[in-house]
Image (cartoon, rainbow, N blue to C red; front, top):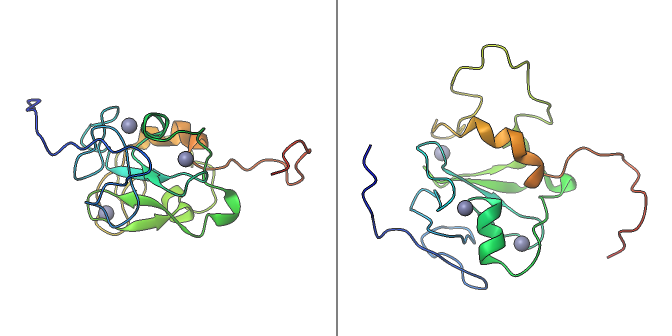
Length: 153
Ligand SMILES: [Zn+2]
Ligand SMILES: [Zn+2]
Ligand SMILES: [Zn+2]
C-alpha cells in the first residue's frame, strides 16, 4: 500500500467543525472516512464523541490538538445516545452498540476479525479492535456508583 499524499485531509480546530460530516466533528488530517493524522490504518474509521464538548474526534490526540480544553470521556448515563460515528457509512452508533452491550470484553481466545464484534453493525466495516484497549479514554468506565466527592461542577 503506497502512502500517496492526498489533499482530502482536513484539519479543523475549534470552534469550527468539518462540514463533510453530518455530525460536529473535528481533528487533525482527517480523511473522508475519519482516519486522522494519528490513526490512519484501514480499520481506523470511527470517530468518538467526547463528553466535554459533545463533538466527534477520530482520536483523543485529535481532541487535544483541535480543542482548547481537556478531554472527558462520554458519560455513562448517556451510553444510549449516539456517541460513535462510522466513517465508512456515516451512521452513528450509541456507545452501547459500539461497545457491544454494557460489557466487559469476551474471552480473548480466538478473537479473529469476525464481523459483528469489532465492526459497524450497519455497513459491516471493520473497526480497529485495538481501540478497546484504551476505550476508557473515550467512554466513562464503570466505576463505583457513589462518587467520592471532589467533583462539583
Ligand atoms: Zn472536548
Ligand atoms: Zn487523531
Ligand atoms: Zn458503517
